[in-house]
Image (cartoon, rainbow, N blue to C red; front, side):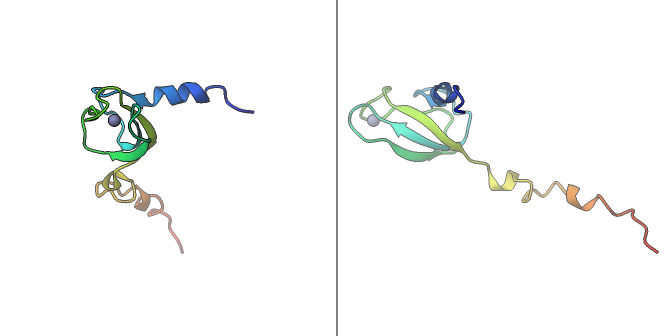
Length: 92
Ligand SMILES: [Zn+2]
């Protein structure tokens, strides 16, 4: 069984220059006619930029999102939920 939404999902992850970057991650950069697609990390940009050669014809396709290490639950300093569960078990 192949989910029929696969194509649709693809088109929802393609962004144009000037659009707000909502998802930090690895993007495939699709140029218009002058360069093969290549992948790049978009981590600090607020908006997708124009290409110097193909201008606003460039497209950005999300390959996968990336999380920030210090926001991962194993690396956050403000969470110690794993220690609190079995402190009140009494053993004789
Ligand atoms: Zn280009």
